[in-house]
Length: 170
Image 1: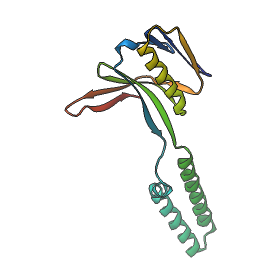
Image 2: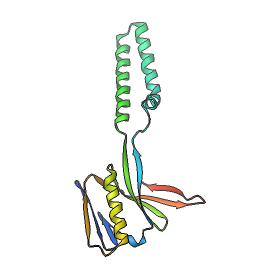
Image 3: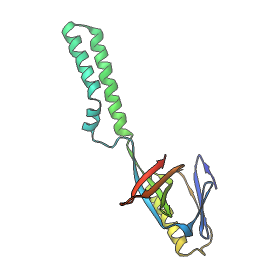
Image 4: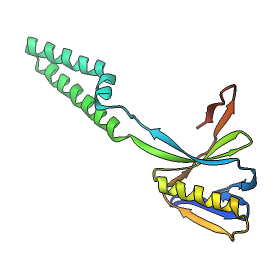
């Protein structure tokens, strides 16, 4: 199975699951779950403006200086700075998205395996794994998943009095 530009292949055969170039023994899994991961800026537009407050203040100072002294250059510079700030705020607001991660837990180690922006894809994999754990005699199941990425070096270790999860890696 491989990860290529068009997606990832997942194959479950008996009680093993192969994702790209990794193999998982389903009998060792204690939990299969989905984790929601927020990517990008997830605040309100007012929060985005607040984060750019110093650039906005700089543009206002330039504008006031240019208006009071009659300097055309300062007015143009203030408009350019204001335009750049507005573009940055718009880009911050457009980049936010939610990603769903397939997590496998085995012996207290929680590992993110696959991620997708479509929750149905990850839900389908969770259902396929659950069905295979319940009945390992099912014949081979194979899925080709477009728009899914494999997570490398992501591991969630649980320890301490309240089982605090710490993500290591990516």
